[in-house]
Amino acid sequence: MQESAYFDKYNPIGGVWDEMYGLDSNVREHYRKVIEYISKESADDLNKKEELAKRLFMSQGITFTVYNSGEGIEKIFPFDIIPRIITASEWTFVEKGIKQRLTALNLFLKDIYHNQFIVKDGIVPIDIIYSCPHFLREMYELKVPYDIYVHISGIDLIRDEDGTFYVLEDNLRTPSGVSYMLENREITKRLFPDLLPQCGVRSVTEYPTILYKNLMALSPRQISNPTVVLLSPGIYNSAYFEHTTLARLMGVELVEGRDLVVNNHKVFMKTTTGLQQVDVIYRRVDDEYLDPLVFNPESMLGVAGIMGAYRKGNVAIVNAVGTGVADDKAVYVYVPDMIRYYLNEEPILKNVPTHQLGNADEREHVFKNLNKMVVKKTNGSGGYGMLMGHAASEQEIEDYKKEILKDPRNFIAQPTISLSAAPCYMQGALKPRRIDLRPYALYGPDGIEIVPGGLTRVALKEGSLVVNSSQGGGSKDTWVLA
Image (cartoon, rainbow, N blue to C red; front, top):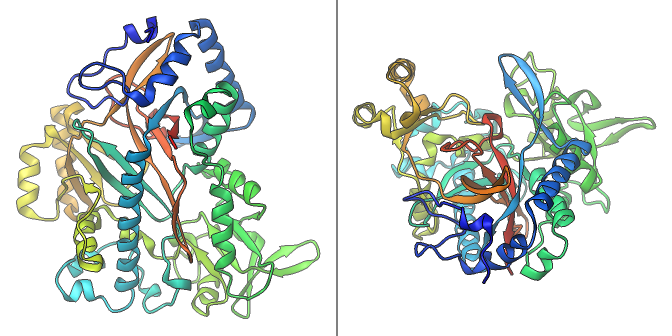
């Protein structure tokens, strides 16, 4: 196979799993067709494709908001034109692992809000549950349709230097990013129309259809055409582009709290022809803002009385209220034990080794090795408030220690995992950049379905391990081969 200038100059990072190059410095088989195709393109052609991708993102308003120093700045989501490719066998493994994990997490949520057997049997400590801000007593003994709590999840996966997949975290509250997965594919179709069918890439476009089917199935009223709405916090939310995209693709109304009203324990949408009863709410509003009568009384984003309607079974809410207790990073440590406890199986996907800083011995070990650790808040998101030990100064480490000691339960530490790298097209050359993967799983009455792909996030800064868009990361299209 003819190698091109792009690939001759590509230098894999030492000691890091490279998605394109094997250990023998040969191109992995599943990347060959893409390389052959790109090798025939001049730098000028690829630059034009990159420019076209930027213009398409801009013209379609594919942006996210960065909240920095108090000002919300909308930015185009950086997109790399070289796809990340996953083989059919790798995907089968990932899919099995995610289904197993979600089944156990869902059983855990049902148990923790009902009998609490896992606590009584000493598998998960009670104080870890009760100290979690997302454990909601309002959900205790509340029956949810089909016993499904986590209808939509995004499980973040990374690969270590030997290619092993690890779960970095479970996103079970209001996971975001799926619109970028869908848009990345649409843009790739424009850039490389012949390449997708040639490589036998599986489709991701069924996601909105599967989601809509699952939402319809949750309707408490047995009617042929239930009313489904997507509840958004509004245009100032960083994921508002996603809310509008999903509502449009599913053909459901996009509403805000002020568009809904509760009457006689039922939820209604205000329309030009009067009130219309709502059966299912796909909410992108966090628990604490959902009902000002029950949670935060200052909230203008939710609907007064919605928890009463939910408790009576007159409306289904997706994801179920209170699911955040299962994606608390202090609870993450116990997921392998949950899989053994509820399913009597060994975990297929491994956890990253994790230290809970609420435990004095583990805290002492972490403090001695902070320069080799990543420390995160147990309920943080978006990469905010993290300490990357290998990149922090002595002073930053000392300041962070003081922060931890104020509330140790609020922090976990993990060894710095060497994320795998993939080729990215940058200034006319291919360069390795670190990546992760967030596949999206949909749990409905018929079981768990995962569209073959997901959002591959890229740390665009050289040497960086932080892939979050809020911290300067970008994304690429994810190809799962048939």
